[in-house]
Amino acid sequence: MDRVTAGWINGFIGVVIFSGSLPATRVAVMQFDPVFLTVARAAIAGLLALCLLVVLKQKRPSRSEIVSLLVVAVGVVVGFPLLTALALKHVTSAHSIVFIGLLPLATAIFGVFRGGERPAPAFWLFSVLGSALVAGFALAQGLAASPAGDLLMLAAVIVCGLGYAEGGKLSRTLGGWQVISWALVLSLPLMLAIAVLRMPPTFSDIEPPAIFGLVYVSLFSMLIGFVFWYRGLSQGGIAAVGQLQLLQPFFGLALAATLLHEPVTWGMLAVTVAVILCVAGARRFAHVAPRVRREAL
Image (cartoon, rainbow, N blue to C red; front, side):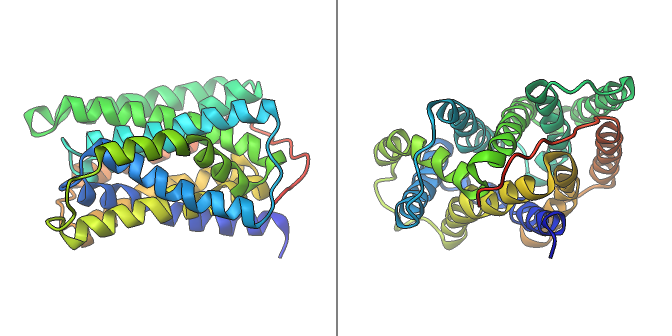
């Protein structure tokens, strides 16, 4: 199997895993405090990542790599999980998944700024149109939706796009699974301390679905999914493999409807499809050419 094909396969597995994150978070925040859920998932994944790095005897990142790893940590270890957990206290996972349709665009924009590419004017046309569709959808919900939840989801998409772009760039030299592992380890002392302070007095009244949600976002969303995702980005390139994120809203809506029995309206589906088309158009004119120096997997 060639490198590019392996990258697409790994990226696809990562997207499928990430698709369950919002439904699992929605279930977990029904009984867990959003802050505790955020720090607990990071602490659990961080302890596992530390074990992997020690057992496999990975070298420590350089000073410049640590700066990039801190950006990854702020974006995907703390920022996105916390903001989505807070948002899902106000909106359903099906509603929030529409906003995830903007994630590839956010990743592309930060990739442009970080990589110095100059996309064609059509790129910005598609990006503005996609943003307008999402904003229009949120406003059209009126009192049926939560402005606070929508704003939190938009903020989550922005910080996650930054974390994806920074991690994808760093994975070319540091390695796919090493990026998320080191980011988790750098966050571990703070996350573990807050998790202990915010821990519920007892878990006896926590129902199994909420426990399952915590386990899923800790093991799969926070660690295993990133192992495949960053490895895929490293092998196949951010521009190409990043397009697989366009499939995430479809998978997420399907999970929300089947597992959580949440209503998925034709309006949600229409906006999701429209946003995906806009993001696909923007990516078509992004002209991103990843510069892969070496693979360290």
